[in-house]
Image (cartoon, rainbow, N blue to C red; front, side, top):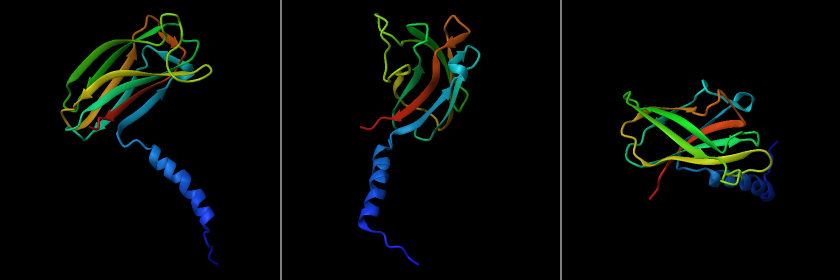
Length: 161
């Protein structure tokens, strides 16, 4: 027994499929996040991301995302960032980001308790070699257990001109 597909059924199927295809961002080279156990980022628990780079011609923007709750105790966050290239070269950075404005209003998007903040790291970056780049990020705050951190992510996007 064969079933006939009527136009209405096909239309219902194609709308979600087309929305999915349109929403896919072809410029995203890498995107991942690490959830923090009990919404707490322990000082010894680095967020590590292995990014496979195959394009050494186009430039990229690299940024972090952090999702915090209202129990995050500070206005800012310090990050220690280590990047190891496929040939073993190490680049280290220490960067401060603000998660609240000077009046204590939480920055970022979200509703309720959770806010997601985009943290620009490097722009217009050319990766010189193909292969795996390892990004390791550790918080640099003066507390071992940093409460109110839901997750921390890394995103690499190809710049189109």
